[in-house]
Amino acid sequence: MKESLLACKQAGFQAEGRALKTIVVASQKGGVGKTTLTGHLAVEAERQGMAPVAMIDTDPQANLSGWFGVREAETPVLVRVLPEGLRATLAALEDAGIALCLIDTPPAITESIAATVAEADLVLIPAKPSPHDLRAVGATVDLVEGAKKSMVFVVNQAVTRSKLKVDAVRALSQHGPLAPVDVHNRVDFAASMTDGRTACEVDAKSPAADEIAQLWAYIATRLARVSK
Image (tube, rainbow, N blue to C red; front, side, top):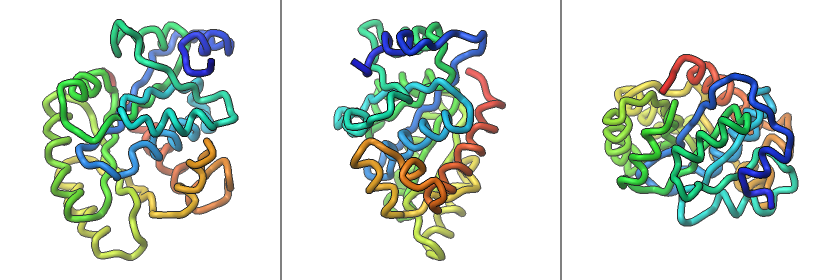
């Protein structure tokens, strides 16, 4: 079964003396594209050389698990949280030689999500350019700041030349760092997630693929400057 820590070891991953980096994708608001970003960034991170990569799905809706279940490629791997908890799971991933772990979270602010954020090197907060989404950002920001973790906002599902996008950029930049790359509302993203692939894997020269490539390149530079 692919979905296991054992799969990491069976794939021949070996520790190289580098510390595991953990990105938590979080937002109180549902429908902001957390799962799509998690899967796309995991694949792109491996493509750009930060490998091997693992993913953890902590959302009861299990959309990331569903995507992975129909994915033909063996990597990035999806792992379940061990009975001993998330911290023990991340330690096991590090021992297995995993370089990066991305964690998808449910749309809520709970003690369990707070515990997940506490394990992050970087928290990625996607937000759609809409009034409801912008109003919902505050609770997520409070959670991340309370955990004293680094964070980055990403404008997701944006519409080109939209005034709402401009307003979103202004609002988010008041709370913290904002990724210089917007991820737009493209059919490629939704279509690719139905068969276990990413937009980059469907068409590496598409605008969607370019946005994800640029976004990961930026996130990688941020990740290199932070530590737990």
